[in-house]
Length: 276
Length: 231
Image (tube, rainbow over all chains, first blue to last red; front, side, top):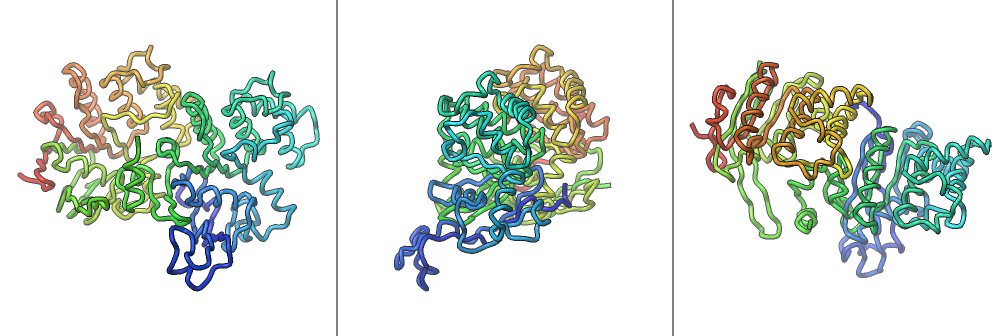
């Protein structure tokens, strides 16, 4: 455990909207330059995700959490910075230098993503099984029978009845859509799962079901998970380590219980004291 | 042989909102021998739990060293060890038991204990066998094993906490008021279990309100007053 290489390393990741100006360095109001109006959505983020761990990212809305996640999944192109994956070119190549084909390979086999909004992660008019099959085909599967079996297995793992696998997710509840997204992300057993606010907007019993599922996934597959949430209870239950983001920057990081019981930064203290 | 040496440990909390520094404990020195059981007593707010939480690194110590003799890592300063090292030690060598139960939703008592083992890499079948043995050892009624513990009594929760921590057979065990709010019969049960652990050479530090109850179990007792050990 101690000598393992990170599954993912991010160094000095920066994503800004706008050109920036010399005043940006000193005149940011939150994450926006008062002079040139450039928004520094993700500002110099560096972190490592180790094998089998859950790394939590907390912060208020607009702190850059989802932008960071979506950059990692190639939805946005960062302004500068580097991210490497242990399973892509042995961690020697920046993922944002990857070709389109390599990016598809990374998204299909090395990383899985579950979005806060299922519309971003699912094809709502295709069946649940087809959504999973899309991932399997992307990783090279061609045998329809095998893909159906695998889709059934994955949907069963997220407690969706196989009798509903031919239905389109648009007919499912929010919690079910989230679970279909999770099964889709797991299709090719990626080394790293990106979970962006997966329990937000779900009622408590469904939230518990999704949390339980994530814990089981971690135990069963030993996957690494990057978990974004603004819900500290979710972070407390799942994350081994946690980083706190504010205005696009990491202001504090540490063991999850230490962050919650002995927060050092002013913002983290405010966050913890806001816990209901 | 010492398993734990604490030198000049100090901890304070800075509250940004109030611009206030609160001192919790200062200049704490303590040595725990292998297989020894140390009790810490003191009034509420004296800083007892702070010491345990600094050892567990739930709190970041401000001053001093906490040198732990790890089986795998050798001598390591818990005050400055990396997060990965602390996670490793918590998983394999150091246990922490409090009176509060922190459990995932929809996790049964048996699964909770099994999870501790599966985190260490034990396969599910073996984890289940060991978890059952541990729950039986702590005399948690068998009909509660497959129940979600949200409705457990204080004593049942504590026994589950103990089972969860001890199934990993930690070399160092910290107990934060394990007998608080328990009835007398359950307290006797916990005391007997701690005696058994001591006989198995587990090194332990425990916080107790009613230390006289632990007479004959603790090897040494420290009294803490306003964050400082007093004789």
